[in-house]
Length: 138
Image (cartoon, rainbow, N blue to C red; front, side, top):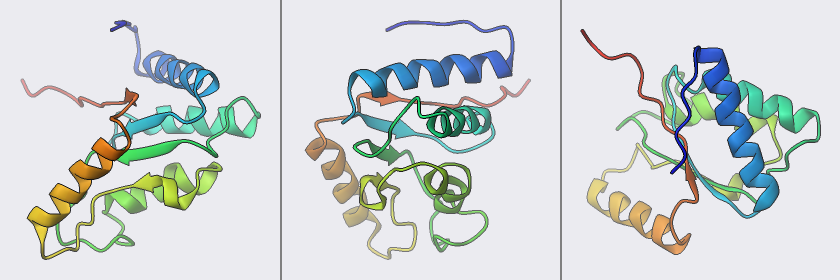
């Protein structure tokens, strides 16, 4: 594992995007684990900028998001799917069939969790996981 320490949020976001871009150039079929929240916002903005500059291609990438709110519709403004659509999915050439977020509307939660675990196993794991840790409470 490579550890990078940044002096600022902006620098951290750029370094994470650079590292991710290098991975996608090296391996176009990368499986990315993606987060939501405040921490990755600039990361997504930078990845979109790389895409718009023709520096990265998402056409063969698969994404697997960490989570979704339970019993919130995908188009709800607070759903993680909507978050991802607004900031990333709709702005790059990632195929809809290649991005995955747990179904937060299911009434069969255990089955959905098992299916999601199977998705990760069938993808032979996640090649690169992006995480946001947010601010620590003091």
